[in-house]
Length: 135
Figure 1 (spheres, rainbow, N blue to C red):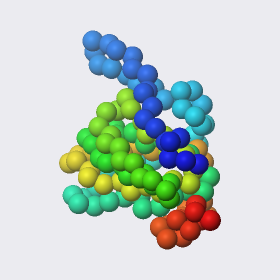
Figure 2: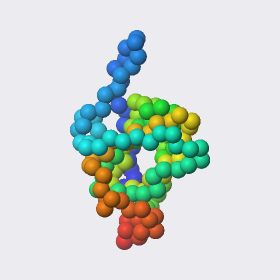
Figure 3: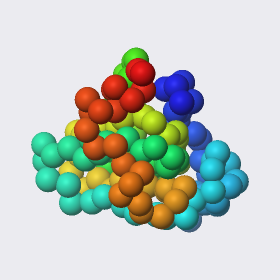
């Protein structure tokens, strides 16, 4: 899938004087149904996460707190996104290499995934990824 399919999605905000609320429902407002939710936190300064692609998995990444950068690469072009709002989610389609870095102090990165964890779905070597998408 091309990088153009990856984009920031505006999540719904219910405004209230007591505080805002954003709900994410499987199959509603995002282009896939999700079966797994996980989050990254307490990432040490200067550390990076990601460094892989998925063969079939779709993901929505949300900065629940703080901020971080995501660099996406489809083997032909790269694009960088800065996430820092809990009502924005970055949709990542299959076959996109991702790197997550520049975590602010106290940041929390939540990921909604279309399927359960499956090590066989990962491509963990960038050279192998580039050869696969450019063949």
